[in-house]
Image 1 (cartoon, rainbow, N blue to C red):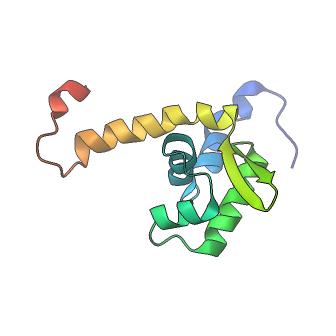
Image 2 (cartoon, rainbow, N blue to C red):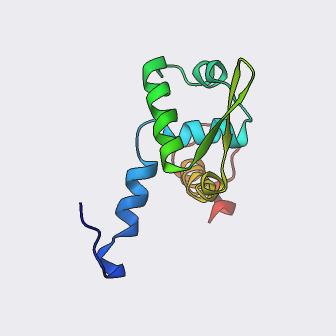
Image 3 (spheres, one colour):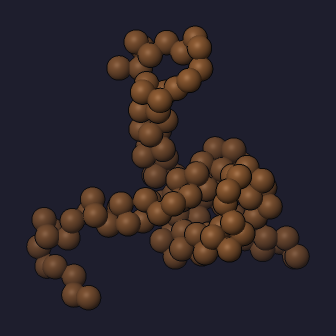
Length: 115
């Protein structure tokens, strides 16, 4: 695939969506970055419905994208957020804000102050 030479033809929104919109990607970023779940099993337990094969594939893709890095300590494998992954937190925060405003089911959440 040949990259367009002009900046407006490169479509950074499309590339960002490709990197972040795969199923489970933002939730895995949340787990590793916010919740400090760094191990494969921890991420699995925190995401019912996520199959091990899918998690393995998604972690690999996220490493290739530069969102996370795999760190080996002897027999133990951990995943850490990268600076590029930290930049994606703004996307996570936008989703969280939107979800709290329009999709919350918790009584007592003041949605007036989210604007």
